[in-house]
Amino acid sequence: MSPESKVSSPSGAVASLSEREQFSAELERFEMKPLWLIYRDVLTKQPRAREVPFLWSWNVVRPLLLRAGGLITAAEAERRVLMFLNPGNPAQIGATATLYAAAQLILPGETARAHRHSPAALRFVIEGEGAYTCVEGEKIFMKPGDLVLTPAMVWHDHGNDGNEPVMWLDGLDIPLTAALNCMFLDEFPSLSQTESAPRERSEKLYGRALFPSETLAPAAKPYSPVWAYRWAEAREALACLAQGSAPDRFDGTILRYVNPANGGEVLPSMGCRLQLLRKGERMAAHRHTTSAVYHVAEGSGHSILDGIRFDWRKGDTFAVPIWLWHEHAAPTEDAVLFSVTDEPVLAPLGLLRSEPYPENGGFQAVRSVFQGSR
Ligand code: 1HN
Image (cartoon, rainbow, N blue to C red):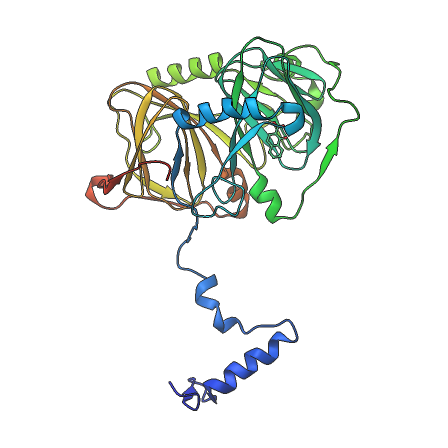
């Protein structure tokens, strides 16, 4: 189109394209821009995530993590962590747009410095025993499958008093805190906190339906007073639920980790779930506005993520971005998936939305099988 072409709007306003371009260029000097140039790109009919579904195989991650153990000490690294980056948006630190995930290794005899920061964190132990996280002076020894919380601005350090490497999945709300520009870090005055609280205090005091009365006062913290959710107990609860009730059509037999003071999510920015897919179960597909990081806690199976089949087994971690069709199945054995979701962030904003897969009886056709890294 020639620069002289006239364009008009229903109101009768007429201008040449070049006049409009010149106008836009002029606006730049005043740090302004016409909305009409980007309106359709901003206000999309549906979420358009840059992030893609992806899986980090434990077969790949584990040897790399152990290699990192020979390359750098936990002290030198602060945290010996390999981050899981989403290939659709590698410049951002995160597995989804809101959730950061990573694998961390601590070797026997090592300690990781005490600090606190504004991003909230959780870990789910993958392998090894003898390591602890000290949260606000309470030393929590961790076993595989245990979930340990370190909410925003809570002092924490790690150590391994045992005789084997200990590895866990880290989940943090870093992409969110970074987007809010709300990053704070305090270093503890010494390397480690002194153990000032009895072992398992938070579990004994808040995890057993017997509360100090002030816990239920309105000023209660916005996160769970229980630092650790044990695998044995969670797994037992899941088995119990499976016996008494029909599985959810999309999620199978699923439990929420809750804040016992109010029944809400364990952290204001991250919710945790544990779901059982019984041998032979195939759940239907849906999509929702929450994104999630899944970690295979037990068994094997597959998920179909936007038409791609991702086969997974114990130790694997995979990302399901916002508004992505997904369905889970466990054809050959029982499987248990631990997951972290940003649901607590979306819910109070009124942004929760979900849709069942409308075609093919609710199941996706498999277009391809995920092959992993480049
Ligand atoms: C952190 O404090 C830990 O304490 C792990 O284990 C990962 C990633 C970014 C920032 C802080 C931890 C982290 C982190």
